[in-house]
Image (cartoon, rainbow, N blue to C red; front, side, top):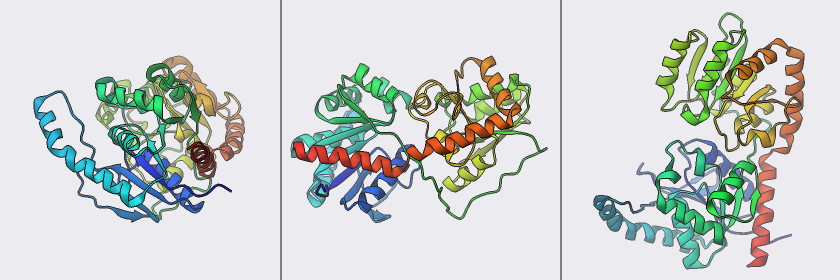
Length: 382
């Protein structure tokens, strides 16, 4: 059995913020600790006034990550802030003494993690969650520094990606050679935070549900357009919040489907699971999806899935067996797929049953095991 490795998980974001990356790192940290690996999470200090703390038995450090920009004022701020930031990262390293640095979702955290790894001659792993193309702010399109830093990391570090589309982007745009695909996971038993809600339907109609950030890339406008052309008039539960909410509300009115749409806002993990279990189908209409953890969550809750074929869901779903894949831009076939799913409850049940079997391969235990094996190989090479 390989000796335990001291792992610094260097995450772009973490508690008290919530999202796919945060949940991924949380479960990985928990799994590594259970396997006897000393683990710390180092994450970006967003100026929230947070101090280092123990969260679920794992020390979390909030570290400053100022980066230079082109304007003189920004450069001046960076020159003033960078010495303190560098000292904070060096202090974290000296106190924990990690064997491996594992960057999760490359951003300013990756720039500092890479510099630290070079100075301290510590092996580094970079895991991409699709931030290079799925970031709503297009940060890699705007930042020459981030692009250059990730290209450098692609030459020096061991790379993993959550899906084949993410791996391909690392290879074609950032010069990566070998990229190990380690997917996301899901808790097959769900999580109970004591705040689960009972979904209430109006009019006893069908319900289709979308969950995620209300941003352009997630394609919820495409879902509304397809729903407007479908023969069925299901309720549409949109769970999440974001910059596009007002536009989506306006679009729903313009399309005449506003009476069908319920904007649920942000919900806890337990609430999302309850809502999924109460829906007839979960729809993932993203213009491009890095992975599609919503697919796993729907399967775990026994709900059939209709998802985009643009990106990660194509790695997960076998079309017609455990889900349905569509091009969300092609509105008419998208609407037809909604109708077919709601017209055929027996077929929907078959998809649901198959999804329950498929999701058994996507556990957090599997994810942690894959990382642990990678760590052991890097330790042997080092």
